[in-house]
Image (tube, rainbow, N blue to C red; front, top):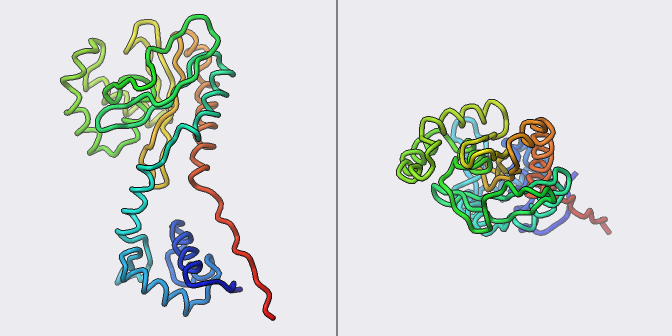
Length: 260
């Protein structure tokens, strides 16, 4: 069934449908966007001419074009994670009584963008808002590093090697091993590496294209991490999935209009 609407609305629905890789064929796109095939093809041709859509000449499958990817990158740069992540940090700090942290990547560094302190009397966090560290130094920072493509991991490790001299327990080889372990485990875990007797658990926040936009982590004394590691990891995963769902919203169904 098709829905009466303007050409702009139809084009927007087609682009929204195209964000799902299952909708690459003309028939699938038209059905998902509730646009008739002839109109869908005409609009897709226009979007292709503007660089918003590409079509494989062999398979005839449609895909996002370079201009769309440029817009997506610009939108991600404008995304402020703090209001999206604060409720999760509050819940984590309240549940585990230790410090919950939001970190974001900046070049080959991670930046502490937000944190919430727990009520446990010994504050294990050694970061403040605005603190910077080489990627991999700290649980959230390690989660960010592990979420990067291999080629970028290699480049980052080469860039941060001089800065790692400030951390006598860390070198590029150690971080590379931790990257592999983090990927296999599904979350980052660091104990007694950055600061003695302190550690953390962290999970990356992937953007719509899978590239990490940030990471959430919990910092605590080593024993408070090891005693509760499975529970901490589950809670972080649950919050990370909920945050990711905020930039993967369920598309609104278009209003159906009755023919007079």
